[in-house]
Image 1 (spheres, rainbow, N blue to C red):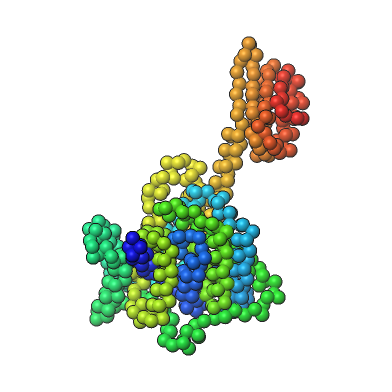
Image 2: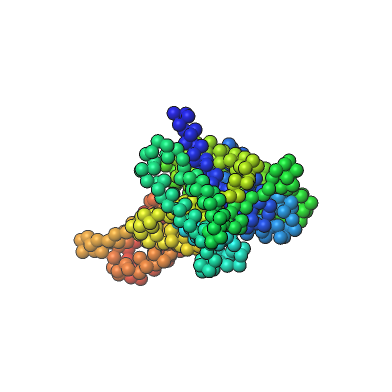
Length: 507
């Protein structure tokens, strides 16, 4: 059993490595920092955070959602080294948030919003990778923002792509996608030999072979800009030159601390949301201690800040790839991090033969698994209170970013909660007994100012010459605004010859 699980984790680790490699490099490129910073973040997140984390399947690494913050922070502070110092303190802030048990905030995000976030990430991932699939690589691999570094947006990039198709890359992309589909078929999965080769690994092998084969054909040849771009590290001197260290000279600058708080809070929110989303994908439905997770992430960000890595969070694209690849334990995440480090240091020449189109096919396939049609159908069946927050989350994410999308979805969900609270909080009834009209209204445990409109409308429906029972036996707290409405009704009831009986209610 143990060897079987180790082998399953090793296969999953390879898949996560192939997904993580372009994202780590692409996010570093989008942040305009050394490419090796993305690898450092992937290694620190995959090893240190994984060991300390309570999550079995979550993968931690550089987050695309923090790209804009990183760019702004470096611009404001004047250097990447000053930003690293802010990252160290942001990590300390995350540890403090875990200590004060702020991790529970993730529990208050509705399921419809979490699933909308997953579907939104899947859609964005697909749209963002289509240009790379067609061999147009102006925008970095890891960029997930609507407005892109190359001056275009997510949708206009598709139009520009059509004028800049690289035939060889497109052929590789199509073959890669076909191989991924084949790898999902029973014929492949049930084969004793083929089942041991993960589909993404097969795609990369074929991608490298095709890249080499196409060199003799000018029409199909893959230029270097369409291949994985890696930092060159052939010695300890190269490694040292690719590391950056924090500069704490700016700690007296107020803007430094604004960046610290922004980084710490946003990274924590993204982690909590992604951990919550990972739990939804987890086939075993394991629960995660969010406070422990925040502290693990904080330690990871301190480590990244000290040795020149990008900020890390739990990342759902890599986490979903890990789960879908059949991971059995944390070992798969650690293996992916070790592969990142070993391959970049020992076989960079092999990795630079991997076409971006092959990796794009893998990421598109990962995105598809996050946004299957069945998920949309399921939310339609549950009614507007489910599908509206779900779709609003997706739409806002497409045009802004993850946090704004989730925030918008939560606002829509809260509106439905308020509506339900107003409409369904009160138990009411009326009947005619011995020729007299009786009304009864039971107050819920909590009555707020949101209930004012309902109470006014209800009291307006009560006929003259009737009897009203206001039952507050279950009520524990009543807002002053709502209480004023009830008191005013009781005071003026005699004008309409309405008799009011109060049960455990004090005027």
